[in-house]
Length: 310
Image (cartoon, rainbow, N blue to C red; front, side):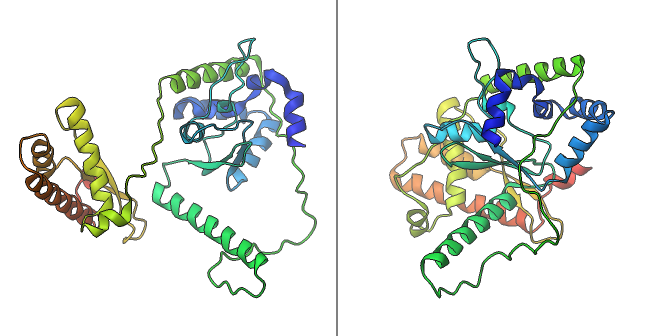
C-alpha cells in the first residue's frame, strides 16, 4: 500500500515534502511549524508525528557501498530527475524526532537521531540490544526448547481493535508554504553537495591485537587522528573526544581534549629520525595520557562542560 501510494504521487512529491522544513535552522522550522499549526488539519498531522515513538523512512535506493549507505543515513541522497525535480531520499526525512530508522530497498538500515536530548552511546546501546534480542528470538524459533533469559520484554497486550493499516498524512499547504518547502529542498541539496562522506572498514588488525600489546583501542584511534592530521598539515588542532558521564544521574558528556603534550611529543617523534623503540615509547606515553584524561572526565573531574555552562 505504501509503495503504491508513493507511485501515485509522482515526481511532484518534493513540493509537499513537509519534512524538508525540519532540515532548516531551528528558528526557521519553529516559525514554519507554528504557521502549519494554524490549520486544524495540519495540527492533527503534527500531533500524529509528535506522538510517534520514532519515524521509519522507507527509501527506494539500494546502496552500492558502505559509503553510500552512510551518506544516506547521515543526510539522504540528493538526486534530480530529467525535469529538475528532487527525487532523492533527502526528501524522505523528518529530523524533528527522537530518531529515524532508515531502511533501504535491500534491507540495509541505519539510525539518524536528534542529538540535543540524546548521545550516540545511548542510541548504539539501544540498537545493539534490539539487534541481539532479534537474533536470540530467531534462534529460539530454530531450536526448540532453547532457553533465552536475557531478551527484551514483550510489548503489553492492547485492548480493543487496533488499525495497523498505513495511512498517508495529509498536509494543507498554501502557495507560500510550497515555496518554503522548495527553498528548504534547495538548501539541503546544497549542504549535501558540500559534504563528503567516506566510510572505511580497516581489516589490517582489530581490537584484540591492540589489547594484546597493552594499549587502549579507543586511545590508539584518537592518537591516529592526531597523527594523520599532523602528517597532512604539520600541526595539531584543538580537538576533543566525547566521554560519557553515565556514572551520574542525568549525566550526559564531558569533553576530553586529545591534543595533549604527550600527543604533541608523539607526532613529532613519529616524524623524526628516532628509532622504532623511541617511537613506540612515545606512543605508549601518549596513550596513557589519553586514557588518564578520559578516566578523569568519566568521573566528573573534567572542566569543559562546567565552564561552558558558566
